[in-house]
Structures are given as structure tokens and as C-alpha cells.
Image (cartoon, rainbow, N blue to C red; front, top):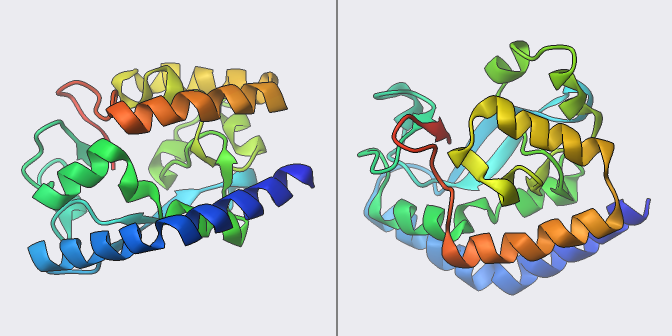
Amino acid sequence: MIRRMIDIAVSAAMLALTSPLLLCAMVAIRLESRGPAIYRQRRIGRDGRAFDLLKLRTMVDGAERLGPGLAVNEGDSRITRVGALLRRTSLDELPNLVNVLRGEMSLIGPRPTIPVQVASYTPRQRRRLEVKPGITGWAQVNGRAALPWEQRIELDLHYIEHRSAALDLEIARRTVGLVLFGHGLYKGQTGGWT
């Protein structure tokens, strides 16, 4: 209950504070390329429930149907100029705060994944679905998409097994550094996920 109250208070405050920036980003996205400013992607949340993750669109409209599909490489030609800046600063994730307010996500937890990834989970990996997915998490502050997928899952499972207020505070602290310096956005040249 306390975690949910913190999620609501912090996400509402962050949305209020960043709304001018969010509006400017949405205008810039629309000026640079056709298509909606907000990108919706089906993700799997707690207990296997599907929801639409909201992000600022950083790629050309319909990018998931072009090239390597959902995999995104550093320097991917589908990423717009505005999108590259939004990704580097993690501002593309600001609409995730709406998912937190709706109760689909938490501020901290394993990142929500796409259905095809969840379908290939082992029974142990399915434990990722025991908690709400987060905007940031233990895997994000320990390498993000620069890590192999299996290692990210293990880091998420470590978080679930050792979840505490102290660990959440450490993740929040380290997330600030990631946002400021933009490390680990891509998995080398072989692709992360949008």
C-alpha cells in the first residue's frame, strides 16, 4: 500500500513538473516526422496481464515493421534525430508515468517485456511477473540493454528476491546517473529492444 502511494505521489509530481518538457518533445516529434507523438506497445505486466506501454515515439512511424523489427541497434536508421536525443536522455520514457498512475507499472521493478519474450520464459524466469514492472530497475542500473537478455532477467530476479526500500532508493539514485549520462542504451551492435 505504501509503495502504491509513493508511486502515485511521485509519478503525479513528475508529470506535473515535466509537462512543459513533455509537450515540447511531442511537438518536436510531430514536426520532424509523420505519425503520433506517443508510441503504444503491448507489454506484459504483473501476473501476466497485458497492457499498452506508453512512450514518446523515437523512431519513424511503423518502425517495428521495417528492418530488424523490434530489435534496435545503436545508429539504427529508423531512429529520428529528436528520437536519438530523447533516447539518450531517457525522456522517451516520461509517458511511462501515466502507466504508473494507472496502476499498470511501478516506479521501480523489472522492465515490462513484450509477449514474445514472455512466451519463451522458463518457469524460473516467469518469476519476473510476480511484481509490477517498473520504469527503472536493478537490471537498468547494472548495464541495461548492454547486458545479455538472460543476465538482465537474473538481475531482475535478484531484485525480486531482495526487494526492499533500501534497494529501491539505491536504484533511484543510480537511475539519476543513467539519465544524466545515458550509458547502456543499446546492446552493442546486435540489438536491444524498443
